[in-house]
Image (cartoon, rainbow, N blue to C red; front, side, top):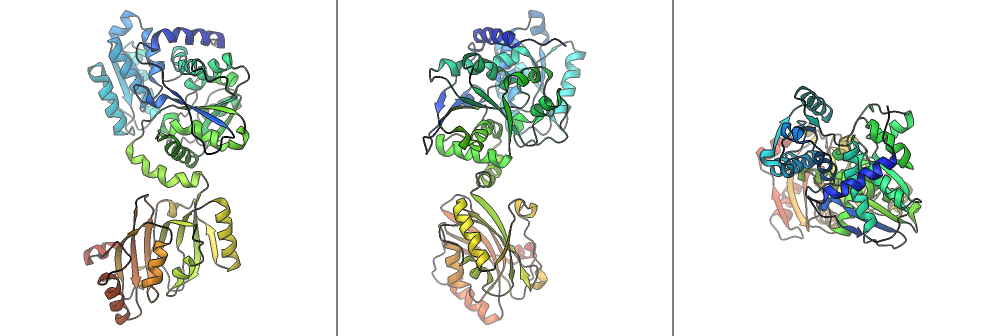
Length: 510
């Protein structure tokens, strides 16, 4: 098969410049505020485009080339989100119609955005369980109805449209870049941007960034041709492509100097970095370039780097996962599983060995044995502080292991055996969120109680909330505890005893 050359792509990008600005102006190129100025990172803010993603560039450029007959028939595309928005925008602007196939797994937020942008110029078909299913149905529709299929990436003019964002980088006047981190899904943006940057900055290093379980382009380059990867992770849904395109593979194998992969946790950490530095929250795929740059921070000392914030169309519900995993991705959050003798004061004694500067962000514990307990504690600390804590625990011969990636910790499965409870009392506790607050409560009120259940997770608020279950050796001790905690003023902001029907649902006897 004969493929176009990089010179052909350069010419196509030049031609695309005449078209894309009929729709929108250029997006900003911003220097990221960094704590240490040992390197420079510039962000191309495609999240500020008309559809909050770069995809409009390629789809509009391609659809501008439709003949009158093709426009009258309309176009077809398949997309899980951003490309669909680009096609919808182009259909509206060019007075044509688009049949857009989206898989059933597409977040409602993206479907609603496509509907809002396209209006009467589109018809959405929610078909298939995956992008591959939607793609197959869209391709069949285009063939059966003799309509143009607008590919998300494997088309010269789509690639050229994406490449116009690199022209804006060059025209911004910030000077030459040493390195660029470009996220890769199908490879359209990476091919177009890399081609243009290398044309103007011949010495630039282009790094292709893929998800650990999304590396279809690196796989294609290694094997010599595109083929399906066995498993596709969809957390970064904007780059979730099982097989690279043959055209994008043709360009990327020439233009990408090397490939790296980033984990989902590293992407979450990059999102946190962008929020803290720029007050920007991209979608996961939008942060992959920054994740790659952060991963190679030491490699980039003294270098001027570029990353593209390629989109910000994230479902709101995904934020909780991002927050939970950001600390893990930056190596600031770790979960420890302890093995301790079960007796009153065990957990309090354990917490007393934690340094004050180690922030407890999660506590998961349920009584499963009257001999041994295995609480899980998540901490937020520097690598040096974690090493100090681990050294101290080893000196004290307190048994622990790293549980950061354990599934029961990930999904907060807190096991317990209600048959072991004698005089249980479950409380919902609200306290002023500060280091040591929970430990202070336990020291003040819980020396005579056994903690049979503990469920706490840091939420970033000024107050912390925990559900804690206590058990007591006698009725008098339980009564004294209730009098002190529930009926007298204390340091807690709010304490509520759970109702019996709630306790039954939890599973303990009442």
